[in-house]
Length: 276
Image 1 (cartoon, rainbow, N blue to C red):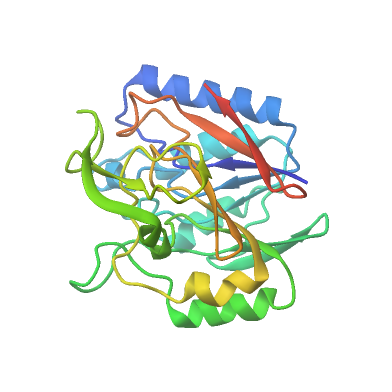
Image 2 (cartoon, rainbow, N blue to C red; image 1 turned 90 degrees about the vertical axis):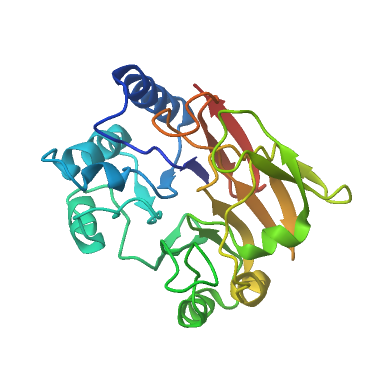
Protein backbone atom coordinates (compact mmCIF):
# COMPACT_ATOMS: atom_id res chain seq x y z
CA UNK A 1 0.00 0.00 0.00
CA UNK A 2 1.24 3.47 -0.88
CA UNK A 3 0.28 6.36 1.38
CA UNK A 4 1.01 9.97 0.44
CA UNK A 5 1.82 11.95 3.60
CA UNK A 6 0.93 15.64 3.41
CA UNK A 7 1.76 17.83 6.40
CA UNK A 8 1.11 21.52 7.12
CA UNK A 9 -0.24 22.98 3.90
CA UNK A 10 -1.45 26.10 5.79
CA UNK A 11 -3.91 27.25 3.14
CA UNK A 12 -4.55 30.91 3.88
CA UNK A 13 -6.14 34.00 2.35
CA UNK A 14 -3.41 36.49 3.24
CA UNK A 15 -0.38 34.63 1.94
CA UNK A 16 1.38 36.07 -1.05
CA UNK A 17 -0.16 34.85 -4.28
CA UNK A 18 3.14 33.42 -5.51
CA UNK A 19 3.52 31.29 -2.38
CA UNK A 20 -0.07 30.09 -2.61
CA UNK A 21 0.20 29.19 -6.28
CA UNK A 22 3.50 27.42 -5.75
CA UNK A 23 1.99 25.37 -2.93
CA UNK A 24 -1.15 24.31 -4.79
CA UNK A 25 0.67 23.61 -8.07
CA UNK A 26 3.36 21.60 -6.29
CA UNK A 27 0.88 19.58 -4.27
CA UNK A 28 -1.27 18.84 -7.31
CA UNK A 29 1.78 17.63 -9.24
CA UNK A 30 2.94 15.51 -6.28
CA UNK A 31 -0.46 13.84 -5.97
CA UNK A 32 -0.42 12.98 -9.67
CA UNK A 33 3.12 11.58 -9.49
CA UNK A 34 2.60 9.60 -6.29
CA UNK A 35 0.01 7.14 -7.62
CA UNK A 36 -0.97 6.62 -4.00
CA UNK A 37 -3.70 4.36 -2.65
CA UNK A 38 -4.43 6.85 0.13
CA UNK A 39 -3.58 10.48 0.91
CA UNK A 40 -3.20 11.41 4.59
CA UNK A 41 -3.27 15.06 5.63
CA UNK A 42 -1.33 15.38 8.88
CA UNK A 43 -3.03 18.52 10.14
CA UNK A 44 -2.96 22.28 9.58
CA UNK A 45 -4.53 22.09 6.16
CA UNK A 46 -5.83 25.61 6.79
CA UNK A 47 -4.13 28.37 8.78
CA UNK A 48 -7.01 29.08 11.12
CA UNK A 49 -5.71 32.31 12.72
CA UNK A 50 -6.18 34.14 9.40
CA UNK A 51 -9.93 33.63 9.70
CA UNK A 52 -10.46 35.29 13.08
CA UNK A 53 -11.18 38.74 11.64
CA UNK A 54 -12.11 38.26 8.02
CA UNK A 55 -15.17 37.67 5.90
CA UNK A 56 -13.25 35.25 3.70
CA UNK A 57 -14.99 31.84 3.72
CA UNK A 58 -12.94 29.21 5.56
CA UNK A 59 -14.55 26.48 3.48
CA UNK A 60 -13.10 27.92 0.27
CA UNK A 61 -9.54 27.54 1.49
CA UNK A 62 -10.10 24.05 2.81
CA UNK A 63 -11.73 22.88 -0.40
CA UNK A 64 -9.02 24.27 -2.67
CA UNK A 65 -6.66 21.74 -1.03
CA UNK A 66 -9.04 18.79 -0.70
CA UNK A 67 -10.21 19.23 -4.31
CA UNK A 68 -6.71 18.26 -5.41
CA UNK A 69 -7.27 14.70 -4.18
CA UNK A 70 -9.52 13.92 -7.15
CA UNK A 71 -10.83 10.38 -6.75
CA UNK A 72 -8.02 9.18 -4.49
CA UNK A 73 -9.21 8.23 -0.99
CA UNK A 74 -7.97 10.60 1.70
CA UNK A 75 -8.03 10.86 5.48
CA UNK A 76 -7.28 13.75 7.82
CA UNK A 77 -6.25 14.56 11.37
CA UNK A 78 -6.51 17.93 13.07
CA UNK A 79 -3.53 20.21 13.63
CA UNK A 80 -3.26 22.94 16.23
CA UNK A 81 -4.11 25.69 13.70
CA UNK A 82 -7.01 24.19 11.73
CA UNK A 83 -9.80 25.43 14.01
CA UNK A 84 -7.97 28.38 15.57
CA UNK A 85 -10.78 30.68 14.45
CA UNK A 86 -14.58 30.86 14.50
CA UNK A 87 -14.96 27.57 12.63
CA UNK A 88 -15.34 24.52 14.89
CA UNK A 89 -13.91 21.06 14.40
CA UNK A 90 -17.41 19.69 13.91
CA UNK A 91 -18.03 22.21 11.12
CA UNK A 92 -14.74 21.26 9.48
CA UNK A 93 -15.68 17.58 9.68
CA UNK A 94 -19.02 18.40 8.04
CA UNK A 95 -17.19 19.97 5.08
CA UNK A 96 -14.82 17.01 4.77
CA UNK A 97 -17.75 14.57 4.88
CA UNK A 98 -19.12 15.99 1.63
CA UNK A 99 -16.24 14.40 -0.29
CA UNK A 100 -17.13 10.89 -1.48
CA UNK A 101 -13.45 9.89 -1.33
CA UNK A 102 -13.05 10.96 2.31
CA UNK A 103 -12.33 8.25 4.90
CA UNK A 104 -12.25 10.72 7.80
CA UNK A 105 -14.60 9.55 10.53
CA UNK A 106 -14.33 11.95 13.45
CA UNK A 107 -11.47 13.27 15.53
CA UNK A 108 -10.11 9.85 16.52
CA UNK A 109 -10.82 6.84 14.33
CA UNK A 110 -9.37 3.80 12.59
CA UNK A 111 -9.43 2.68 8.98
CA UNK A 112 -8.83 -0.83 7.66
CA UNK A 113 -7.49 -0.69 4.12
CA UNK A 114 -5.57 -3.14 1.97
CA UNK A 115 -4.67 -5.29 4.94
CA UNK A 116 -3.46 -2.37 7.08
CA UNK A 117 -4.96 -1.00 10.29
CA UNK A 118 -4.54 2.78 10.26
CA UNK A 119 -4.97 4.83 13.45
CA UNK A 120 -5.82 8.55 13.35
CA UNK A 121 -5.56 10.67 16.52
CA UNK A 122 -6.34 14.31 17.17
CA UNK A 123 -3.27 15.51 19.08
CA UNK A 124 -5.08 18.69 20.14
CA UNK A 125 -4.02 22.30 20.11
CA UNK A 126 -2.94 24.08 23.31
CA UNK A 127 -2.71 22.79 26.86
CA UNK A 128 -5.02 24.22 29.51
CA UNK A 129 -2.35 24.95 32.13
CA UNK A 130 1.18 26.20 32.64
CA UNK A 131 2.89 22.81 32.40
CA UNK A 132 2.91 22.74 28.61
CA UNK A 133 2.25 24.98 25.63
CA UNK A 134 0.94 22.27 23.31
CA UNK A 135 -1.82 19.86 24.22
CA UNK A 136 -1.36 16.22 25.14
CA UNK A 137 -2.99 13.00 23.98
CA UNK A 138 -4.74 12.06 27.22
CA UNK A 139 -4.97 8.65 28.86
CA UNK A 140 -8.58 8.09 27.76
CA UNK A 141 -7.62 8.55 24.12
CA UNK A 142 -4.61 6.27 24.55
CA UNK A 143 -6.82 3.60 26.13
CA UNK A 144 -9.31 3.89 23.26
CA UNK A 145 -6.52 3.64 20.67
CA UNK A 146 -4.93 0.66 22.41
CA UNK A 147 -8.26 -1.17 22.35
CA UNK A 148 -8.65 -0.39 18.64
CA UNK A 149 -5.31 -1.82 17.57
CA UNK A 150 -4.51 -4.47 20.21
CA UNK A 151 -3.08 -7.60 18.64
CA UNK A 152 -2.15 -5.82 15.40
CA UNK A 153 0.69 -3.78 13.97
CA UNK A 154 -0.95 -0.52 13.05
CA UNK A 155 0.32 2.80 11.67
CA UNK A 156 -0.42 5.96 13.64
CA UNK A 157 -1.07 9.37 12.10
CA UNK A 158 -1.24 12.57 14.16
CA UNK A 159 -0.10 16.17 13.94
CA UNK A 160 2.12 16.82 16.98
CA UNK A 161 4.99 14.44 17.60
CA UNK A 162 5.11 12.43 20.84
CA UNK A 163 7.11 13.92 23.76
CA UNK A 164 9.42 10.88 23.71
CA UNK A 165 11.36 12.45 20.84
CA UNK A 166 13.08 14.81 23.27
CA UNK A 167 14.73 11.87 25.07
CA UNK A 168 16.63 11.28 21.83
CA UNK A 169 17.79 14.88 21.48
CA UNK A 170 20.85 16.76 22.68
CA UNK A 171 19.27 19.73 24.45
CA UNK A 172 22.29 21.97 23.91
CA UNK A 173 20.99 24.85 21.75
CA UNK A 174 22.43 25.31 18.30
CA UNK A 175 21.99 28.37 16.14
CA UNK A 176 19.73 27.97 13.12
CA UNK A 177 19.20 30.33 10.14
CA UNK A 178 17.58 33.71 10.68
CA UNK A 179 14.41 32.71 8.86
CA UNK A 180 13.70 29.74 11.13
CA UNK A 181 10.80 29.90 13.52
CA UNK A 182 10.81 30.74 17.21
CA UNK A 183 13.82 31.68 19.31
CA UNK A 184 16.35 30.85 16.55
CA UNK A 185 17.67 27.88 18.48
CA UNK A 186 17.61 24.23 17.60
CA UNK A 187 18.61 20.90 19.08
CA UNK A 188 20.23 17.88 17.50
CA UNK A 189 19.60 14.18 17.71
CA UNK A 190 22.15 12.48 19.95
CA UNK A 191 25.23 11.05 18.27
CA UNK A 192 24.26 7.46 19.07
CA UNK A 193 20.81 7.80 17.46
CA UNK A 194 20.62 6.28 14.00
CA UNK A 195 18.40 8.28 11.68
CA UNK A 196 17.94 9.49 8.15
CA UNK A 197 16.82 12.94 7.05
CA UNK A 198 17.28 16.24 8.84
CA UNK A 199 16.32 17.93 12.10
CA UNK A 200 16.39 21.63 11.26
CA UNK A 201 14.33 22.97 14.16
CA UNK A 202 13.64 22.01 17.74
CA UNK A 203 10.75 19.53 17.86
CA UNK A 204 7.66 21.04 19.51
CA UNK A 205 5.86 18.25 21.37
CA UNK A 206 3.97 18.86 24.61
CA UNK A 207 6.29 19.46 27.56
CA UNK A 208 4.48 16.85 29.65
CA UNK A 209 5.52 13.22 29.19
CA UNK A 210 2.63 11.03 28.09
CA UNK A 211 2.00 7.29 28.01
CA UNK A 212 0.99 7.30 24.36
CA UNK A 213 4.04 5.76 22.71
CA UNK A 214 4.82 3.44 25.63
CA UNK A 215 1.28 2.03 25.66
CA UNK A 216 0.83 1.79 21.92
CA UNK A 217 4.32 0.78 20.77
CA UNK A 218 3.73 -3.00 21.05
CA UNK A 219 0.94 -2.61 18.50
CA UNK A 220 2.51 -0.05 16.17
CA UNK A 221 4.90 -0.50 13.29
CA UNK A 222 4.96 3.18 12.37
CA UNK A 223 3.96 6.65 13.53
CA UNK A 224 3.75 9.67 11.20
CA UNK A 225 3.82 13.31 12.30
CA UNK A 226 3.76 16.86 10.95
CA UNK A 227 3.77 20.15 12.92
CA UNK A 228 7.54 20.87 12.80
CA UNK A 229 7.80 22.19 9.26
CA UNK A 230 11.57 22.09 8.85
CA UNK A 231 12.10 18.53 10.12
CA UNK A 232 11.98 15.41 7.96
CA UNK A 233 13.94 12.82 9.94
CA UNK A 234 13.08 9.14 10.38
CA UNK A 235 14.26 6.75 13.09
CA UNK A 236 13.33 3.69 15.11
CA UNK A 237 12.25 4.10 18.73
CA UNK A 238 10.59 1.52 20.98
CA UNK A 239 10.32 -0.70 17.92
CA UNK A 240 8.28 1.92 16.05
CA UNK A 241 9.32 3.64 12.83
CA UNK A 242 9.01 7.38 13.60
CA UNK A 243 8.36 9.37 10.42
CA UNK A 244 8.54 13.16 10.68
CA UNK A 245 7.26 15.02 7.62
CA UNK A 246 8.31 18.47 6.45
CA UNK A 247 5.78 21.16 5.63
CA UNK A 248 3.98 20.80 2.32
CA UNK A 249 3.28 24.51 1.85
CA UNK A 250 5.07 27.81 1.24
CA UNK A 251 2.54 29.91 3.13
CA UNK A 252 4.09 29.81 6.60
CA UNK A 253 7.47 30.17 8.34
CA UNK A 254 8.98 27.49 6.12
CA UNK A 255 8.62 29.62 2.99
CA UNK A 256 12.42 29.80 2.56
CA UNK A 257 12.72 26.02 2.75
CA UNK A 258 11.89 23.57 -0.01
CA UNK A 259 8.47 22.03 0.60
CA UNK A 260 7.49 18.46 -0.13
CA UNK A 261 5.60 15.32 0.73
CA UNK A 262 6.48 11.70 1.45
CA UNK A 263 5.21 8.43 0.02
CA UNK A 264 5.12 5.62 2.57
CA UNK A 265 5.28 1.99 1.42
CA UNK A 266 3.47 0.23 4.25
CA UNK A 267 5.01 -3.15 3.44
CA UNK A 268 8.64 -2.06 3.73
CA UNK A 269 7.91 1.04 5.91
CA UNK A 270 10.30 2.97 3.70
CA UNK A 271 9.56 6.40 2.26
CA UNK A 272 10.44 8.43 -0.77
CA UNK A 273 10.13 12.19 -0.98
CA UNK A 274 8.69 14.46 -3.63
CA UNK A 275 9.90 18.07 -3.48
CA UNK A 276 8.47 21.08 -5.26
